Image: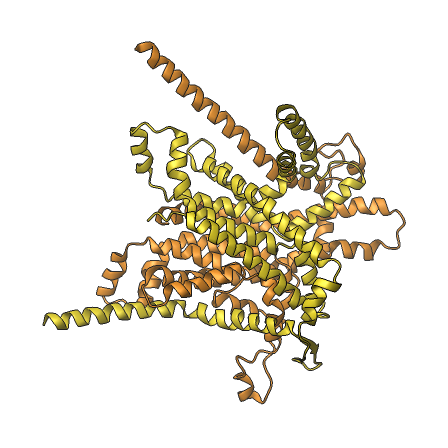
Length: 308
Length: 318
């Protein structure tokens, strides 16, 4: 009797688990159809010459590694753009992470006007993405032409940066040059950094909310300072979120439209003129992206502590 | 004793006050940087060109006008574009909110074989950049064969799916649209923390897994679904590239925004005063940008409370 009961129980959980497959089935179908197949195709395209046929469809002819060779030996721009893109990601990443983490920390505390502050901080997620940013750029161009700070923010940052440089030169003539340059550059690009940090702030904020207040209460009882609380509790628990945000920032920066490599890939692909070369470029570019992400995951993944 | 105690209290109070001051400065500064371009656009949209070149004009225009909005609406072809874009955004937003919630539910609530590996696929979709698959995706939608199955039925030809909403629907219901990996991740986080007892008691009462999902789980997931809808709506709203690729005839607000400069040069190429035109163009761009961000901004204002609540909610259950 007992055995039969157990059998039944097992069957029930099995049924329940099968339902899980049904719920993720759409995703699996979509992944195969609209992700896996296209990925394989684009890899195939990068080794083949393609001609679009008049009645829809296309014909291919094997071309070997011709397009890959072209990227490295013929194309004058690709390598330069590639190193610029890599540089941009690594200079931006720490600043974005620090800024969004700090914003989330401040916004998670209780104070008057918190709702208003949150609404404003998340505004870039809503309004300043993509196309609108590009309009902003062209406005800046105009501002430069008529020599007026109509597009304010960007220009307004300039004096801030130079005074920053002045302060740093006063305080820290002992500081290494690269550090000064880095800080000044970060301040210079403050506007861009705030604009791209929206989602990261959201993710950090939701992470901060996972920490049960009781932990802080007991550590306060033990006489921990705010700094100790931060180092020993907040920071370690936020580990997985930092990793997630690091990934997100890297991907966002690498696939951003303002990225020169992405722009040139897009040019080749959208014109439908150089399909294959565009595919080859994107495979080169994105294998490097995967490599970077893998490295980051490997280095930080080990240090991250998963709190359950 | 009393003295040290007083000093301690004073120190603590000072620290709190300093913290509050610092917080205020930080928030004020960031808010300024975020809002300033919007205010500038607003003030530019209310100016005539004369004010733009007048250095004594700061923010508040001397020659106030509302004509810019009329002109910008004409340039953008605003009303039809607004309708198209809203239809597209609501469609993909709702579909993605439901599909990502379902997939997130599957990953967050059930234990099945290979779950970890399958979830790794979700992470893969987050990492695969859209540019890598856009070309084949376009070609596939242009001549859709479903692994060569469709030609078997209608005589050797695939179906042409571009220039319609179908590609957007297809990508949305299968939860592989843009950034859907992130949405699935958010939904999974939110379902993971829901008490298993609720679904079990519903199942004992005779509800199948879909009833449980639809009647019990989805209402609980409303905040996270709102967040997904909002993200998806906004992303689609600002996108001009996907919509251009899959439905190039559709006039969307974002696309019209990119064409303004082009239209403008076409229209005024006969005219001589280039610099003057440039000023007007700049005003037009600011006004159109305002018109373009107005609907999502309104949506955000409406859903703001839910959105922030959802962030807290996903947080609590993490």
